[in-house]
Length: 500
Image 1 (tube, helix red, strand yellow):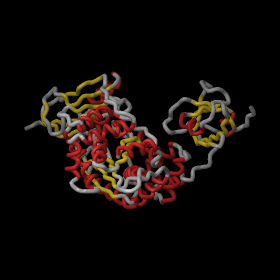
Image 2 (cartoon, helix red, strand yellow):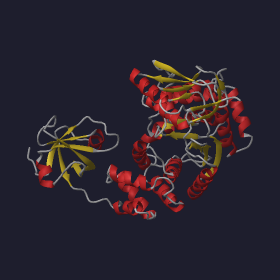
Image 3 (cartoon, helix red, strand yellow):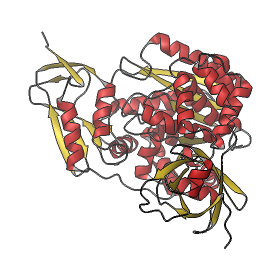
Image 4 (tube, one colour):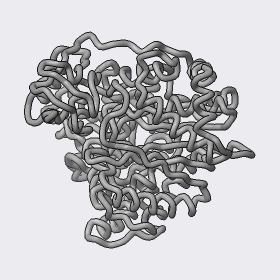
């Protein structure tokens, strides 16, 4: 086998870097010396006509990597699909066209349509490093994208991936802006709307900053990582689905941005609107309901913030040709009892099965949202939704959807549980959504499906000293201890005030 000076043998590193292509080279590699490659250098790797741009990690001291060999992370290996030992050609990539646009935004400039398209194109082609993307996400955080920029970004994201067409008739969809633990209405709503005879091809995300996303909760009960063909088959058979959108190539650049947003733990209003509505447009949705919980510790904290968000959503939806409805809800406290994938799934099933202990607040919210969606294409939506739920038609439709997606599984329970009790008697006057969500995440949610928090009491109820406020569920003793330590430190997520 003949070698060129710019080639190395390729082997799989066997390392999951979650959508980020990484290449590993030894520090004594001839290419590192001749090309000036160093840690975090962006490198273009080519094999058999396929190319990927990856970030370099340098292996010091030789270690596990053989000489004159480069190892590729799972994402990079899948992009090139070489045989182990095949040669890869390495070079410096052309600078990304969008780098100047990102710098402009960082320094307070505006993004036009061409700049947004360039950023999304370079994101899709992996020409932007995680540092570049983090700079972009940060520069857009808060309210730093105006209406025109949000529209441009939405259109660029929509046009970067697949777009579904469901033919004639309305296609219904919904989204909750989030920030409210346990508010898992989507599986119930989809079952009701599909049982009413409407198309509702629901794509959902995994958790970004919460203890569970809709896809995480649904995955406890049925497969959600479907292909586009499988999703279409489910919708054609049952009228609806609840699937993970990250594997469908619908507005795929959004999933790459979410990967950056997750560890940063913040949202941009403009990027959130672009994320939501670009995915709805890509999924072929014509009638969209947006649920906006408003509360002091929710994602949207004031009426002024809600009105600003509604204006932006309405402007973007109008550009996309979507019929939009807004449902504003109470975001002052968690919904249901469970916070975490399996615990929320138990709540969903209790509502669908109409059990005596089903959380009434989750039921009422689901009926409100389903009714508002049905009103988009008719009237008396709330009453129709209640009839479909109470008759068992929604439960039957949900089970049929689960079967079509690959089969229903009953949610499990955590091995480790520990109650957290009230240290004073009185009335619960507030619950901190963010603090209770952090406890659930420290317990292992959403990665450990059975972990999270089970609420034992709620807003407005009275408690005695020693009465359980909530119960921490964990799959390991260590995670239970971490969550308990955080719950014991600082202020309780439950504010208890004297009755007098």
